Length: 493
Image (tube, rainbow, N blue to C red):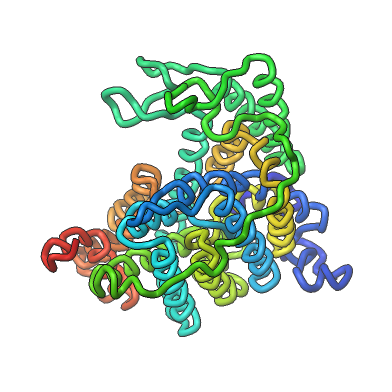
């Protein structure tokens, strides 16, 4: 079942395939059951749900010191983040022709900031990111990445899609303040000491969740985008009257404040981008930190990026009704994976950290996006964000969070394709779905699913049914999960 908020976005075989112009023919808009208007609105929705990266990435990358104590700076990182997202998302739309947006990968950026740059200069850290991207690109060109995609069992692909739904829903709940770090428990409801809801921003999130849910349930066109816009308006009004402030004021936590952006009109609205970080790359890390350390860092980056994107691509393709019935392929898969590999290189070369396909693209798909035109629109909006970076901060995470929760609810429906009566399927599928949100990592969920699938199938005497690439990837994930043990054995810090 495809995830859609409108009846018109049905599988292509149910629509008149006759193209209506050059744009239609190029993007196959009619053939995929969409319209130009729907694609534009979907692009707006995707941008609205992921524009936060222009604010969040600078807070992670721009404020973390390298081994010499140097900072990249918030304003320069904001500029290159928007530029890389714009160029690579447009490239994904034109070359891959799918509604997948691209930007700096969360998780990967934190790893680069706190595990890589802490051991070397920022230029050297970005050099390792470029190398990681080149390796990913070579794996695409050799056909290896596509082969792995096709080797994944259909049940695991369904579990990956469902797990991503749970993962982005958790992101939405956390961004909205509904789920917080607990007192005596890992997570709890709200910021109250006994797990209660507090603060006007949380009220805004709940209103947005209700409004967006109703719009999607009633199949309102662009329901997710309307929900984000309406919730942002509510947030601006609430902030003007209640003034809850930011979640961190003068270094002191304010649990009832806005978690990322305070929804006020910025001054100035237009600001010239600082792009001096472009090309600030060095490949001397191997000499400074040692070959083994550098190789382990690159290996970790490659494996995390490789399977994070693999999982995201599987989930988005199924949601957009682009995957084949058995889930083993999708149109222009090789080109989609190629663009993603190039994006990793571009992210490193731009000092924005590795760029990757974004799971938030699911919001635009949920609003009917089916073609690369959606991505082109999103990319053009990121170009605008280069000059309007201050305006991007108008949308608080409490207004974007409800969209992620609703889309997550739609994606979880993929569990219908999983045979839970077969324990050999149920356990890997369950681990895949639950470890994504529980460990806040798509890669961890996929790795657990691969390793357990192979182990259980072998124990069941079904080892010959396992694709050779599944064996290879499972072994790679065992190394990935045991990386600290490998470091201890080899003596690498």
